[in-house]
Length: 274
Image (cartoon, rainbow, N blue to C red; front, top):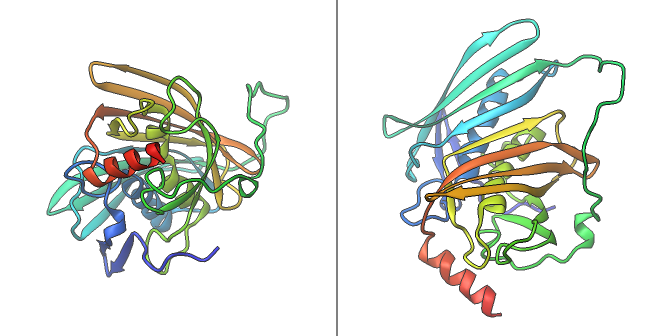
C-alpha cells in the first residue's frame, strides 16, 4: 500500500506539529479524536514499551479538544513491577492539559489449562474482496480506508460491521506499530456505535477505552457494533475489534451530542442523494 505524503503530525524535537489532515469532523474542530488516542498510545509505547509486556488496556480522556497548534506529550510510570506496568501520558497544548491516557501493560506468559467461553464472533470476508465504497464522508475525505460488511452510517436500527485500514503515518517517518495502528483506528468505535441512522455523526466522544488480548496482525482492523444507549444528549457505545485472524478485543466510548462541520454535513448530504 502506498501511503499519502502527508502524515497526521511531524516531529520537531520534543514537539509534535499537526498537519491539516489531523483536524476533526466537528464544528469549531481541533484535533481529531483518532489522532489524540493514537498519539498518546503510540508515545506511551515508544517511550515505555517492552516486548515482554502486552499493552492490554488503554483509556483516553479527551476533555479539551487541542487546537491545531504544536503540542507535547508528557509520560510517567505510575507502577513498574515484575508483572504489571501502568503508564500515564498527557497532551500539553498551549501550556494546558488537553487530554490524557492511562495504559496498563501485563507480562506475557503461558495460558492456563482449559477452554474459556469466547462468545459469538464474526466470520467476515477478506476486506479486499469487498467494494471500496464512498471516499467521503465516512473516511473524512480519504484519511483512512473502509470496507462495509453490514449497515452504513446512514442506516438506522441495524448492526454495523466494517473493516478499516490506516493509509498514512501518525508521525512522519515513523511507521505505525500494531498497537499504534489499532489505537488510531479504535476511535471509530464511537461513531460506529453511537451514530444515529440518517443523521450521520451525532456524538463527539469524550473518552475511549480499548482492551486487547493480543496485538493485531496485518493492516486491517475490523469493527462490529455491539451496543448503544443514549439519554439526555449523552451516548455510550461498544464495538468488538478484529484482525484477519479473529477477534483481538473491544473498544468503548461515551459522548455528547454535537454538530458536525459544515463541509462534512454537505458531503454526507451529497452521498445520501447520490
